[in-house]
Figure 1 (cartoon, one colour):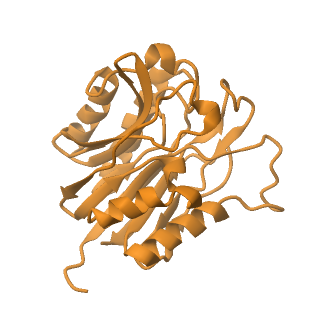
Figure 2 (figure 1 turned 60 degrees about the vertical axis):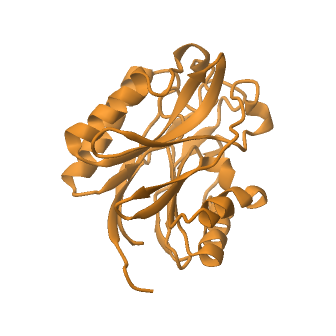
Length: 259
């Protein structure tokens, strides 16, 4: 193949507290700093890390992009000279979007994605995104999508990114289970392993999904818990990392990925 680039990626499996935007952004900045201190080129953070996935506070707290929420993340990228991918809520023309941004180490927003596969029960809160994009980065062409955009039945979104040349797809996530889910009997994550490895093998694209941890305290899935299990698959379909399971499994996982 030739011309491989090695990239060091932080997978920021952080706790997200519903509606606690300042606490969540402060913790995000800490994760960004920690990743930079461990020589990461890039950190990927979860979906809706500002308000919490499907937390109705987004109606009041979502900001435009660029705006005050993205500015905090951009400043952390500048301060720590690191690329950042983060899922945040976005306000635009009286609509709320479940969005993700890719920020470079100079604090510039290179790419924004609005989640397309909004689950039915979340459509009262989030509007549906209508575009996909990729961007050149030092390690290769990179695409963004969010969580359920990579469901097996909507794998065409990832395929489209690969068709645009993406060598790496980065996906903020919020992976949730019932409060009494037994991970010994029913290990979480096979759906994502299947979807990511199929995409990787068919299109030679690496895929990294990073989920938050913590309880969902509002919205249609109130009482469920986000449990991490963040997942990285390389361009050959090999699992590079599957992070720990559980509502308190906050951690920064670091991987070296060949692109």
